[in-house]
Image (cartoon, rainbow, N blue to C red):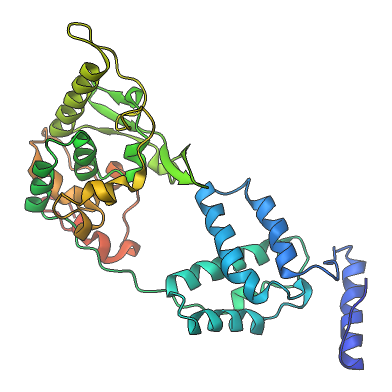
Length: 331
């Protein structure tokens, strides 16, 4: 192991650090290991521990931003100033604040792993401040807009998709991951057990976003009717007169039976329908508009987290304010 310093005092300081690490039997980063080399190793390791979409983001942030700016730096000599200059350089080049935040988080996660393996003495990325961008304000659908959306999609082959998104607050990836065996028509319930997402250019079935997102929810009358009609149409398409078939596979899939692209509901197929793009997430208005779109059975009010698998707290901010002010909601 070799180390270099500009002055005798710096050399003595580094010598003491190396001796202390040797006495603790602490591993020492190879002298030639660069930030780029370490990140390559880290990406291979972390791939088995994070969601595919998270790893794809890590890999992109590393390849496009971190390596071009500080990849040649020696890992053991990476300092706070180096990270700060990287952030300042991205900002000067016009990189968006959200992207800067994600790149910084990627580097912070990688260096935290290096710190736990005792390859570095501290995580210098944690000492660099990166401002959080202000979230864009989202205006959820009103009751009238939700009615217009459902009326406009009534003749659509995937009308059930829109009904489930508006009335149950399902994520697009959750709707695309639904299979017929997740629907219990007798009990009137729907089980959300998986998602469909595009990872490395391919559509893949993945677990739900969080453990709480795996859930079974009751189907409102209008949603149950939409699924029943969708099931009847699927039977007719797959059979012949007098001999319908039992639909299998995805509830809302392609004509070939494959999974539907999750971005489908925001891309070309959504363009003819009113309010989808302005609302951003039509499912965000679930707790407010659903009671006006069907006649619910008498019973206690169900908190929003029971409907869409998320815990609604004050930290969620204005984006979910309507969930806390729904008429008739207990306080």
